[in-house]
Image 1: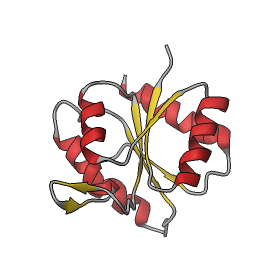
Image 2: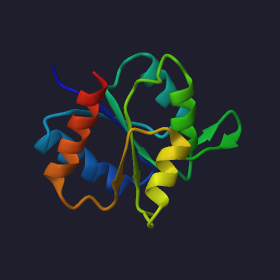
Image 3: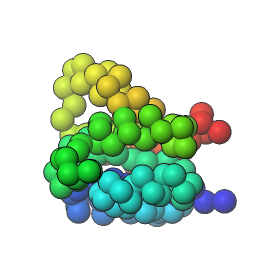
Length: 134
């Protein structure tokens, strides 16, 4: 059974790069959206096995408010239907200490820095995070 990864990312280039690595190298299914309602619907419907969540989403609005990846992760982790769905934060703004802060704030299961240099490690981390949750 193929794992399905939902990529929540507002940069089309990153989205293309991630999709290609995951599909070509990882043999995974990929879905993507930055529409918050859609993210929640997919998560609640069990359509995805793991979410890669960009921390700084510039276009995502939820209930009239601009939200970032941290906020969306908090919403998903607070909902019993989606609390166990693994979420890995992805961010380019990784300073010392950011990682712990983002993880603590959001309740996410892991963290990946952009740009992704080691493609195999990227896939391994995703697979390991899903495995921990099963």
